[in-house]
Amino acid sequence: MKILAIETSCDETSVSVLQDKKILSNIISSQLFHSEWGGVVPEIASREHIKNISIVCEEAIKTSGISKDEIELVCATSTPGLIGALLVGYSFAKSFALAKNIPFVPVNHIQAHLYSVFIENDFRFPFLGLIVSGGHTLLIQVDDFFKHKILGTTLDDAAGEAFDKGAKILGLGYPGGPIIDKLAKRGNKNFHSFPISKTESEFDFSFSGVKTSLLNYWNKQNKNSEQESVIKDVAASYQETISEMLFRKTIKAAEKFDIKTIGISGGVSANSRLREKFNSLSKSGYNILFPSLQYTIDNAAMIGFTGYLKFMNSENKNYFSTESFKEKPLARIEIKNF
Ligand SMILES: Nc1ncnc2c1ncn2[C@@H]1O[C@H](COP(=O)(O)OP(=O)(O)OP(=O)(O)O)[C@@H](O)[C@H]1O
Ligand SMILES: [Mg+2]
Image (tube, rainbow, N blue to C red; front, side, top):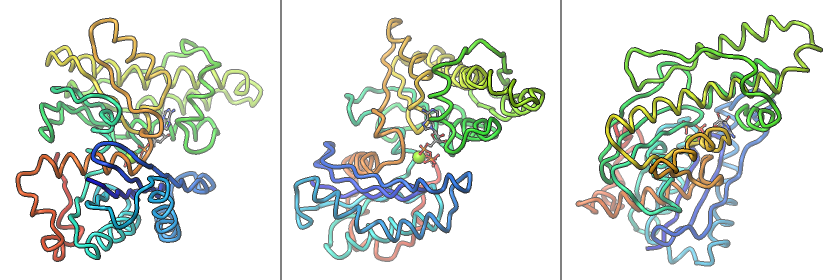
């Protein structure tokens, strides 16, 4: 089955072509200029998607080596995301499916991050999914395709947000995660001890404490020369605390529920220290799965991959027919629960 997939939930315009689960092309156009504003500006993001979507789509089809006429299934991100940005990709994808009278599969962006660990690895169930992105932090037990149980989530900031806000405090720019990761490689992770948060529910996360602690600590280092000399050590210590919090809770859940496969996904799963920590578990009999870097950030390949799984695992394929979708507005097909 040849698939066209579209992702426009935030500031990446991405289009991918797949043949079943195999990725033939995955074009990602990132709107880098949002860094000027210190974060994504929703209205500008939507307008840029409108400018880019056709160009990125043409490029993805050309790179895949198949023709537009061969596409048999269309998938697009339906939720969660910036509504204006989502509407661009979603409407484009749905129009494509309607014009060609082929099925259309709406895909939950977070589910797509979750399953992205299987793009290059064999499926294994049950598995524990840790999704760490710019807007979400979730620990999920997955017993089979689309049989999910949320074990924990963040009570305040998402892990990616903690990296971004931490970088802002340190005056490092946006997005902060990759900058902190790079700087921390030259720093001492044991330089300063930031607090590890405690939550009432054992698998929830909280990052606001560590962020405030960084702010207070950094404000005390009030001379520029002092800050300059320790910034890489502070970045390494901050990164260590965030990754340790994610690691500890995930391992605790893996032990409690006796799950040996752990898949870590989302933008923060690109973090080198987080990878190092989890990969060290391989020697203890765990099967640790990470997506390769191109599938950690927002990308349409994971949308097509998950849409295909959803379509193949669905008992009622008519649900995705163009007839069925003609009348369904975006808001009504949002998949709020896993
Ligand atoms: N190497 C890294 N280390 C830490 N964080 C990183 C790294 N690379 C990217 N990030 C973080 O990943 C986040 C972006 O991830 P992603 O694109 O998955 O999030 P999003 O799509 O904005 O949010 P969501 O998926 O929740 O809707 C940013 O917060 C960024 O700082
Ligand atoms: Mg994302």
